[in-house]
Image (tube, rainbow, N blue to C red; front, top):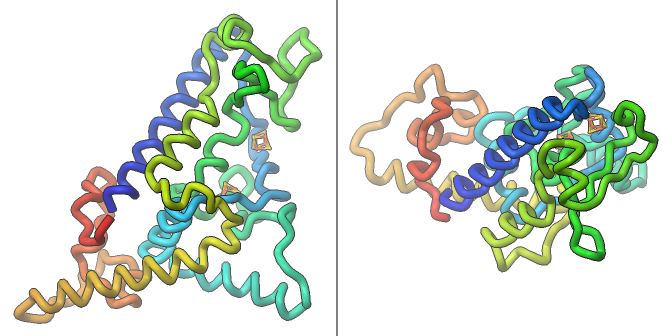
Length: 251
Ligand code: SF4
Ligand code: SF4
């Protein structure tokens, strides 16, 4: 759980950095924003994830959105029955076409690449930060170019450099060096992660039971998914401020 907590802190810093970038770009009168209710980036895209990111997503699904696990596997099974496999450019399995503007069904646990898309710079061959406007974003007023390169250019046009993809990617990989080379499609990585995290949650429950002298009824506030996996109340808190390090899963 300590690694989940560290991953969440990186995700939070990405969000803060993007907010700062959006605010600075607005003040510089070159505001960067997605068109309302767009979400097009998820319609022909299936994200790659590290093993740790897959496990973080698996934990979210097991504890909060068990319904999506069944949905995920039924989508894959339907394709298998039709003799097809998942294409990289197919819509993400967690994209909800019925909620324009709020399409991501796993938003709190989405991966690094999903968080950075549209609002990050990458290093070019000369190690210069380069920022490209997403195809769906309008051009800057009075400018035809859509790629902006160099620290000075980014500072001048947007007031600051966007978050750097390379920097945050390195930080995520550093949390799990053994899995550094294993970035895979969420379609392949998630089933493995679900098996691992489900087992850890069951072991945690067994440990909890063995220390308990009397059975404790699950509180009504406990999510249905967690109750149905037979997990104890101590494994989950709906309090966003609670410390994930308190969860009894080994890191
Ligand atoms: S990043 Fe691009 S495709 Fe995605 S929501 Fe924003 S404008 Fe649309
Ligand atoms: S996980 Fe969410 S944000 Fe990422 S591609 Fe899928 S629907 Fe989009």
